[in-house]
Length: 147
Length: 211
Image (tube, each protein chain N blue to C red):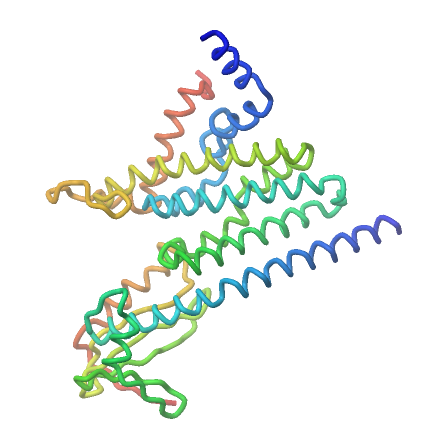
């Protein structure tokens, strides 16, 4: 009984200490991680819309060249040549897959596709980044239905 | 001159040096204990990844061994594995968040292998084989030696793989433009072959292979 009580106390203390430590690390790093995520999203949109940029000026170029349009709970990114890009999400085998797709101004022809997030097995499903971008190459025509 | 030699001999014969050096050479985690092979095959295609992984594993091994050793008389025997996992996981999550915050490109390239440091046998191995029975000072030294030994092998593998597979070192082009990349070395099967060659060389040098 005494031994079980000692184990219980130990587990509670250890869990609390490690939990507090992780909360501290999380709150310190989350600002930097959010900034990195924003940079990654904006640079991927610029890539998808084929707008050249320097890594240090991603935010400035994005703000000056991209118009953001929110419609029916969807966000669209419109370039000055009227080509349009938006994020897509879907389920993968091990986790969600997200990406950016850009369309020509006819809204039917794919300009570029980029996979921005996936959790598939490295070397196997993880090759989706290259496979998808190659398969949905420039000039493929598609029909989109907004749900 | 003889004083200097005596000091060097004294250091060489000290327990601290022996504990530290055994992880680097005689009990090297990769070529002697054959631990941590999964990550050494997966992430050594670039030197930058090998450095990040080596530092990450060394950090987690040193601090988890230190903590386990500090609380070795407090940790109840029946839940010691649970305690190891919690302590190791805490440090691994810290490393993962640090890489995501300050080295996002390396974090993305290494993908799930940063989180998988938790399952690296070196960490649990040092905790169970050494830290739980020894003082914090020696446990930290033992873990540091193993971490450096692991990083050393990752570096050796990644240098060859990056030069032959990409023609670069730390992304600086060093091979001539006419160089044809050995793509096989950038994928895991090529790494397996290279690891086998290294195991053969180092086990022969350290006389660990039966003749």
